[in-house]
Image (cartoon, rainbow over all chains, first blue to last red; front, top):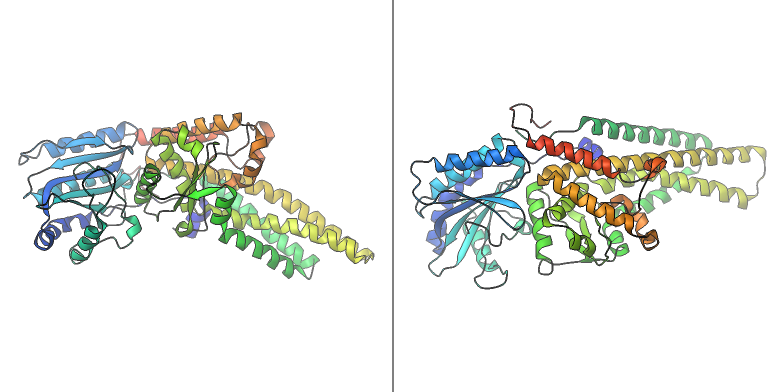
Length: 194
Length: 307
């Protein structure tokens, strides 16, 4: 932010970085080889819900676009709202279709950006699971262009498996741009697609 | 980049004009000082030192004054969750989160920069607002942090503080020194007159600047959350509640009005508008209504370009 912006009290909207998302499939290979976590095929894009007709029309278009994909076999994409008022567009693919999932997520992103809602994008995530039933999500922060792992512990209460998260961080350092500032690894409890 | 953020040119022009007039006043004041008084360096250093301390410790001072308590995620998970998400959307570091056990619904954010910021809400606010409204209020406070309003207002206030000190300085030295020749008296009278005038004008300008920055923060908050109507609804709730509370309980709060979400002093009719740190409710609701209409418009390529 420049001096002029400070003096005039302006905020420049932060442009999302969409490109890093495509590093996900190669990271998934590393993750499976090193830790036994496999992609579940579920993923979601999360964005702030904007009031007004233009926004509703945009996400209807995105939903129609994704559902029109002829190769889609599973359930259609689903739009849900979480307790914080953010919208999640969830895509469910088979576990081996991770690159198709990434394409889905990217289609949502670019449609949002083209319609002027790029600044409202929060994060997107892809779900992973190991044989023991432990869950892990790789969360992509659009505004930072970086990923962070989120591993909720099973059972009641909101507890994270921090050691697993840190292990994943060091594991994927070469494949993904991992968010180095740990204070930005905010929890996404109950995120659809996890 | 394609975006729905539009700058408000009129707001920008007004704020620019206020800043310009403040700067002009500052230059005129310093020039007058240099002509009239030789030992002004000491006063400037003193006033500057005080102000730097206030600026540097603004987060701790405000927290202490408002009995704010820093809360961890386990205690207020929803509050932390909302702030986490807003910070991720705005790409700014997360401030320290505090809660003040006061039933007056209000919130403030302070701190010299985004890395040393505190955002504090009262329990009265948490109790009264819906989640979307709370998000709007928090986004407003985060916008104050992003706009570096503490720094701007502090620097702008410097002149007023300086002028106030000059009046006292001139007054006391006149009484205690007892040098009664005609020339010194005239000089001191001149300094006092100029200082008083500068103080009065800078006071009004700082209030105007504060009002414009409130509008700017409202605007940024509405665009950050995408829900100007939720922020407007929070404003009406908080404003009504504030007006009903007797001012007697709020004496401690007056000094911090400039950093509040909504000022703690009932209705403000007529001329009081110019002394207020916050714009009127109608003005704030009008602006939010306009943003709401802008967000609802169909995307036309080229019009929504960020500038």
